[in-house]
Image (cartoon, rainbow, N blue to C red; front, side, top):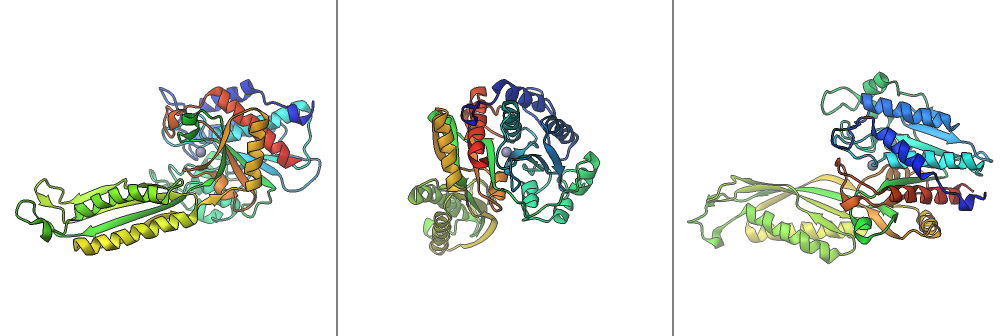
Length: 411
Ligand SMILES: [Zn+2]
């Protein structure tokens, strides 16, 4: 058999996903497997036992990131596949787990067919991608890649019981000895469920992910004047509530003005004194802007700021802005995105390019080597929810595209 007409064993992949999904399973479906919990330990034990059964050399680094490596015909930096096996409190079966277990399935398929790749290949499970107990999210990949130090990560405390990452790693026996930072990788591939509605809505099977959207979060505080809603003439008002309302309308227009994949949301708003017969004297609200193009994102921010400055003058209120979060967009490697499209086409799967609205380990590893992601559809776009679902055929299709793309990269 040549590598070109290989297919993964779909049933084997699905049964591994089911077995892993039983660890931390919730009543009614879904799974709770918080990073560094007892459930995380059991999941790690299972995944590393599978890695060893497949003949992978397993290395665990000081933050508990797990990497299993299969040697190539030649030495050198490996092509890595991977994702995470921790979940949020009400997670689904496939968020993260699919990328790790599809990597193992690719390895087993190559083992069964007796195929050696030129470059080594590796499968990674990164610690604490979700950030549900320990901030920041994507902690494992940040430390693995070198943007965050091991010491800083070890000192992070849990939001619930105040214990540290270091204590929990020691408790579950997953503080390894392999060093972190500046990994030598030929390329990184992450298969993941979309967690959005695009592929499902358009009836497509594969997403070739071009990048991860940049995020800009701003908190806006408005100081106006509280006054009687009946006796204050409209021309004499300094209405903080009006500023919030006008901004909600404005960001909707801003999104269509900037165009492309720009999205804009006012998601939180607090009025004071929040009474039926009082002109609001102060208000705090947030604006969430996202775009996969940094220049467009900056333009959206500038237009928002100009709008707020102008509105402050017209309404006679004071407006202050406070940046809550800012991430520049990640662009994945164009050649790798093309390889994914080609691999999908060769298998007869419908595909499109898209960008991710959610954060992923691949966007961090992209700082160290060429990287890209493969998406499969999420039913109705639902994610971080026990109703998260992807059709078995789509899970298998994604793993086959992963196999095809990996072979292109590793040979
Ligand atoms: Zn994920």
